[in-house]
Image (cartoon, rainbow, N blue to C red; front, side, top):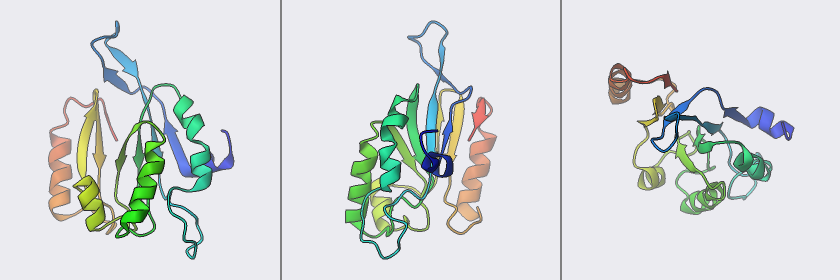
Length: 165
């Protein structure tokens, strides 16, 4: 890996995921996606730093050069204060510099009206080719109530999914 930060903070997944593409002779191509969490600014709680953690941003070129990188999934704590629109604006500017699509699972720092205004839901699912991705809200450490029903129904309806993440 390029540096120790990548070893600790991000997991690069590039195994046999497939995406159906009618323009390709084999009708399937491999893809990769990035999973990263707790990426906000400085680890110092007294810092007034907005945006993503600078050592993470330094690795954007490496991430962009990774073959077939389709998107990033951020697993929470993208900002220090979820109610601060300026922190979200700065973080999203940094994320946009990655140049790939992204999904954000709200962490305890991210939750609030600003998150809901920007992203709409705390939990949802999506398909990428034959692969199912489920984004959940683990803020309370338990999946219960409506979210648990959503998860059960999503998994029951996922018969065609090759992989579930």
